[in-house]
Structure formats: structure tokens, C-alpha cells
Length: 210
Image (tube, rainbow, N blue to C red; front, side, top):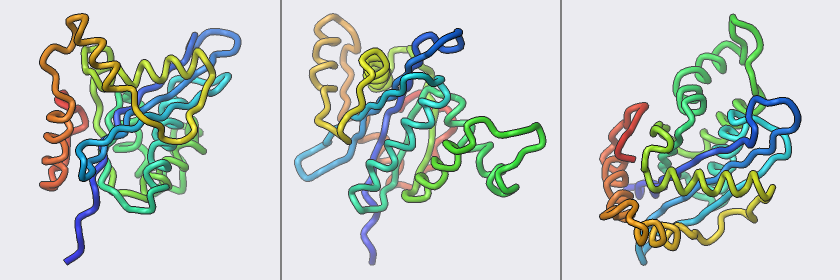
């Protein structure tokens, strides 16, 4: 009997400084990758930057980068992608399948960010992926951390060398010392999602507990 694919949970966010204004708008994307190893839950960070972009392009670029980083392990994984970008989550779950079935065309004109959507669909095919949305800036620790990674990447215009050791533990400890996220257990939160994915649950589009 084949062994089940390992499970990964990825918390993603994006940033664009001055999104929608005239002139250049530097952007960033970041994410927290969680997988279970023999020694416990292992966490890695990644982030990327672009000198002139949009929030939507960075959301797509960050998701593509995350899936490609997982693929570098050479193992097909069951991955849950958690993002506060409705554009990303609704797009990949609802719009992209129809676009692809119609030869990447739509009735209402050209598809915005077409090359990124196509790259995201190809990257998603490397794994068994679910996508879910959480409301941003509502006190979700891992989403807030991914946001901080994205903003810092945009401000510094820095891209990580792949997946790097995570600073989430230190970040959370600092926040909790200031009275934020009291009682939050990141390992328990991961374990709950891991359990649901292992049981074959299809998560809803919006997932408040991610």
C-alpha cells in the first residue's frame, strides 16, 4: 500500500507600496511553510520582491514561488495554501479552471496577469493542493507574520535564497510578550489542519480557523 503524501500548510501574503498610485510601486510577497518531521513541526520562510508591481501580481508570484519550493523536495505533497487574497483564492478555485478549459480565453476580454495564472496552474499540478482564504489583519498570527515578511521584502527589495530558517517562533514570542495572541499554540493550529487534510476533508473557500 503506498504511503500517503506528506502534508504542508503554507500561509501567504503580499504587499505593494502605493498600490494603485502613479509612479513605481515596489512590492513583496512572503510566506510561512509548515511541515511535520520526526522532530516536530518544521517551519521555513520565503519572500520575494519586485520593483514595480501590483498586489495581485505579488499574490500570484508568491503562490507560484511557494509551490515551486515544495516541488524542489522531489515529493508530491498535499498542500494547503492559506491567503488573505480573494483574487488569488477565488481565481484559482473558480476562474482558472474555466479559463484553461476555454484555451485561456474569457468572454469579457483578456485575462489579466495571464502568464502568472498559467504558471500557477502548472505549479499547482505538482502537488495535491487546496486553497482557502482568511480575512487579513484580523489577528491571525501566521497571516500577520506572512504580511510582515511581504512588507519587509517590498521595503528592502529583497528575495530570499529559497526557503530559509523561520523567524516565526521569535516573532510570536515577542508579540505574546506584548499581550498579543495570548494562548495561541502554533503547533496545535497546524495539527488541526493536518488532521483535517489527512482525513480527506475539502476545506471551504473561507476558513476562519486556518
